[in-house]
Length: 367
Ligand code: ADP
Ligand code: GN1
Ligand code: MG
Image (cartoon, rainbow, N blue to C red; front, side, top):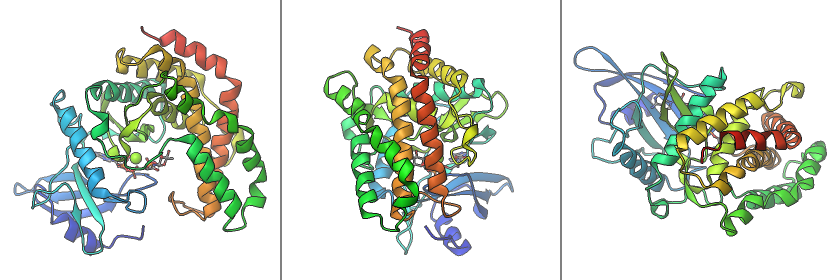
């Protein structure tokens, strides 16, 4: 996505039912997909009212209207059981009552009230923070238990279908568009050596051990807001990828991102490993948040969910690197390769600690 001009942003802002006129709009956050802005408006009392305005990445999300319908349906559903406006996202409608606005270039803009006095952690700063993120995602799972999954549009088909992701990866290796495959042969071999693992969750689903649920599908700690004062969970955000999926992949993506001892793009691989204390905090918080909503067979697959999401994400970064970096935003030329390497290092460490993860999950299983 190209840079957004001030004019583009102000004419989009004018289309929404905001409290006052926009006077500032600056890039915000560290998302890899959408363009996010903190938009400040001045209302008639001279007060500043803040919003998040986003340009939805239509390269990734091909049918933004349907995606917006998903977000609207889910947030309205959640509001039946949650009345605190800081705890559920609310879409600010356009002047004509729509959920988003398409400008003349076809860019899809949407606006949410900015949730004030909140913090959003790139990485949890303590086990307590991570517990709170886990509780929020677990509660999200529980609260959406009564939501009809089949009414949701599948925003990105096969999003966490790892066998499909593996096929795409093999195609990218074969095509080798930029001639990069030779410099990443070690990573390619690592992923090929684990081919038997990729079907574990989809097969468990076929055997009835893993039910399809309404899932978030992007459960990084930076997709939860915590209260700035109490550091308690406030609100689950980034609802673009809500689709039918597995609870264990929601759990797993959080572990991949938040229970690593290093950032997703750490270059020094000696710093990357699985922090078992953080794993335990997340398992505890997630299962508490789910409040008994998960079946025993799913709970037992939580460690595999963590390994699957990590290996899948590594595969996705490498696929994008081989394809010429067309999907994830990058800050430098081998950013996707650096990200891939951290994920593969983490997979190895998870494999070495699978039994530990299983024992921790058993400890927090609340049935
Ligand atoms: P992306 O899909 O690009 O990750 P997000 O929806 O996660 O986009 O938004 C990017 C960042 O903007 C978040 O990590 C968070 O810091 C901030 N953010 C998003 N929505 C809100 C909100 N309603 N209130 C406060 N901060 C928000
Ligand atoms: C993307 O949008 P963001 O940064 O929260 C991606 C996730 C990846 C993640 C890796 C729609 O998430 O699937 O796990 O980057 N989102 C999409 O950091 O592809
Ligand atoms: Mg995000």
